[in-house]
Image 1 (cartoon, rainbow, N blue to C red):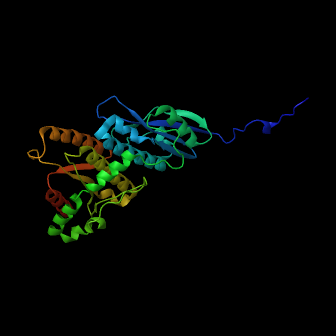
Image 2 (image 1 turned 30 degrees about the vertical axis):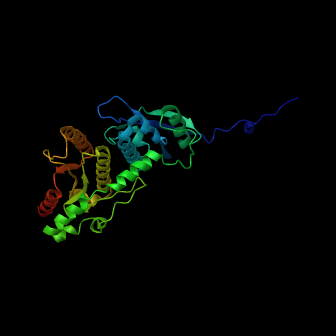
Image 3 (image 1 turned 180 degrees about the vertical axis):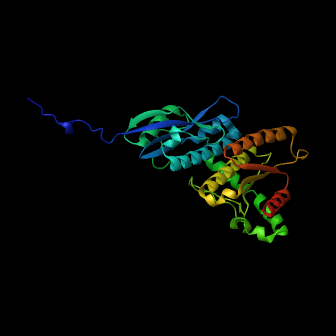
Length: 307
């Protein structure tokens, strides 16, 4: 018996794509050799896909109370890399830029698969202990740890922007109009879900600024929030060329060295984190300033706009 064969007898590889990919690495502890694979970025000339770790609840076992700080870092890393992929496509992998301190792309490799997303998922299954291969591709439930961190951060809304606005209003009402309307209305910042969303507290004639508090009690979430506010300033500056002549600054309130409610160890940790944030600001070509009171920040704004 003879069997006639033709090209339709064999599986077709016509739908396969070729792409380049890199693991997304996070150093959760500053100065440590420890690295976590928190994502896989895949791109070619036609598009990109970023597959992130989807089993972040496991961080609780590794880092206990410090896990919320690592979660913030993962969230920021995703936004930073996704923004770069949207802006530069495959160039974001071929010529990676500094993303965030502690975050980097690993070795660039080539792969073939049925789709960019499939390539990313296959490699995450192999490389990351924070990835659940059995999770739904369409909907990945937010882990309980992430929800808990969000709820905790929501309970302690930073009042610094409102206090700065109050001081500026008492000195110069004309400048007060440049504050975000949300701050003037006393509303909380809404939770953001998209990488392109940014929020700016103040946009004046000579200054664009965000405000944040570096607290001693909940240091990791505070640092995560400050990194987010830095990233917002960077994106806002890149989107509006007309702002080239304006200074982009993040102003943070820190405890005084003689604050009786802050221990020597806590203040030492504050200084360590502040140095790391300064480095982050330098990498993003932004200005980071520290003050002890909201009044000092308000005075700086008034002086800056009057210069």
